[in-house]
Length: 450
Image (cartoon, rainbow, N blue to C red; front, side):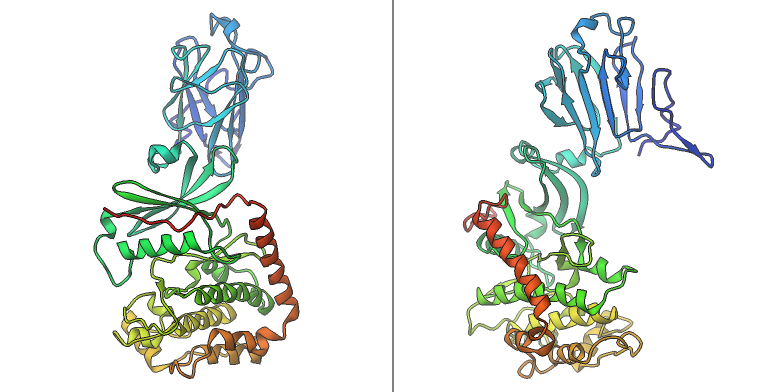
């Protein structure tokens, strides 16, 4: 991170950093002069213009730049957006170059730490751009994807690799790009994230299109890595919404839960059991009261037919069904119903149904069905909601509700307003998808993993 004390103000800098209570505003970047007659500029404001017009933030005259006629009145503009990306827009007649590449009049590009800006010709270097954005953001993608996308902040990290926010260079649309390291995925683990899991995730995302399932724009594979370009949900994980200090009334809980329910029903109708449903894998479009939601992370999902049973231990213990934790006992897609029940319990009460001082104790309480009901947390929750939760987290899977049963329950079936509002989201998605939405759902893609 750049420190203000490291980058002293220059004489020609027009923007004085404000000082409040002795604190100096920190610059987000610096233009380091490559010509001895020019000065370096600390960058504080979101927009700067460079040129020979006195109205420019960065004004140069003949004393600083002998070939001043090569400089347009407004030669280029620097803009820092809300995500921290810095764009250079070429406004000149004679050309602006970044790392010897001509940008072209009215075109723009993202610039990174230590990029060289030249004007008039590639050899006439005027500034080296210094930024607090790490160049790892740039090197995150292979060359083929860098031509289409610019990456910025880290969204998530795991044993599989990283997820970063990306920007389509042409449309400025945001995406989340998931980079999966094949070498870290070569050994099967209880938590998944193995080659089989990656193949499953790609297969599901490339085959399915639903309003409440995260969409994949494209998949790209190199010898060592797989890149998934995914729909970006700026509202973050459902976990953050539950843990926030904002009120979470039952009507808002139901609006979100009904979307998740429709997404899971779609998966089951298409022969897929998610097996790792949890708030961290439910993403929100915004932090508003009534956001769109998307189910994500299909690395542990299982594609099965109607009579198949599953026998592998997977998923997060807190949301895992008892039959999953009773090692290698066959189980069905009702494991997703259990997970949905735990999620609903958590949303309604902001407490967990199964607690313990260790992972083992939590698992033991799940298998035995020892639920912790906090009377204070459930004081304002309706009786139908409580009854639905109980029916979903029943230890005996043969007595546990199915997805069909949930839809028939009064808490869901009789709330016509919530159903209507959610169905409008489905209709909007289908209309956008039919009209050539930007999210192009590719055909089923095979990943080689050689």
